[in-house]
Image 1: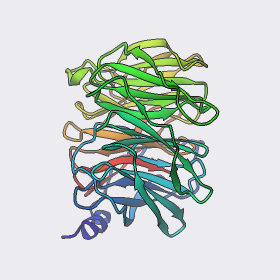
Image 2 (image 1 turned 90 degrees about the vertical axis):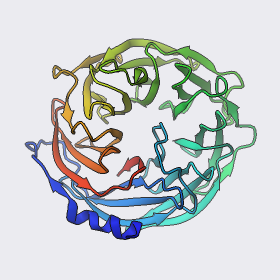
Image 3 (image 1 turned 90 degrees about the horizontal axis):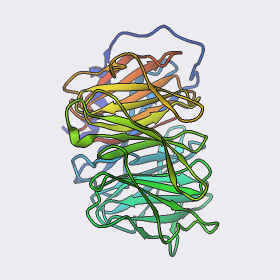
Amino acid sequence: MTLVTRFLAVLGLALAAATATAHDQDDSAPGALYTMSNAADANAVLVFDRTRDGRLAPAGVYATGGTGTGGGLGNQGGLLLDEDGERLFVVNAGSDEITVFAVRHYGLQFLQTVSSGGEQPISLTLDDDLLYVLNAGSDSIAGFHVSRRGRLTPLPGSQRPLSGAGTGPAQIGFSPDGRTLVTTEKATNRLVSYAVGHDGRPAATPRIKDSPGATPFGFAFDKRRQLFVSEAFGGAPGASALSSFLVGRDARLHTISPSEPTEQTAACWVVVTPNHRFAYVSNTGSGTISGYRTGPLGTLERFADGGVTANLGASTAPIDMAVTPQGSFLYSLNSGNGTLSVLRIGRQGTLATVQTLAGIPAGANGLAVR
């Protein structure tokens, strides 16, 4: 059975679960959700239509023109939508490339595949017309100019090394004002940040900060230059945590709440709701999602649920997450059993399962939603 046939069969395998009481925060316009197969023979983007109640239905498969790795990338941010939802950028970790699609009402239109400027690209970030990629295989970052039509041109002089070799990086991200680039290094337990100049190029010498907890992994910003970083602690049972930082104007990271525990295992991926009230962490080793309240100054308070804001199941191994533009729904890509979970976000940050969609290819990676 081909990838396309398997994917289109997903619709018949969808499993509806309990739904939460609706609330007045509503992503009422239909949209779409994207993930990638990361297949080693031919990478492809899998598109799902998103209905008003958050549910998903398969809507197409689009080849990137590159290849994936067929397995986990240890990353966050492998797919990226621009702010207007008009362009989709995708890493091809197997062929060291980036693919760009135009988002159309009927699906995706292939625009371009370009070299990532390094080896094994795993994470992307965008600020206006600047895109940066994290190349895990070469422990480096590289920048691109994005044209008005969405095409990428390498930015000369933008390549920078991470803190060393074999750093095991996981994610790259711009601060909300575009003045700082941040990367996480799992193997060195470091956060590496670069001041970005007016020419779009990072400083030659990055700021290096030791992580409060071991194995810093995924992260998310709020609009106040506050940064929330997961800590997987090498997968030690029940040891995971979430830390928060303020990003200074000089690209320094100042700790706010260090290593607030999830009491779960292997916290990796992080999302923050658009209203900045809640942060969520997927605990890959526990099959759970932990929720936190985020204070105006970046403080963290874990929900009083023992770190189990949502229990997806011990075999699910949730990885990437995405939140809808108005913050009504959270989506989780579950690598352990090849599913996508749709969860409604309640007024107080509670999570309730709306749908579980099966049949997602093994090795699938990354989530983006509009």
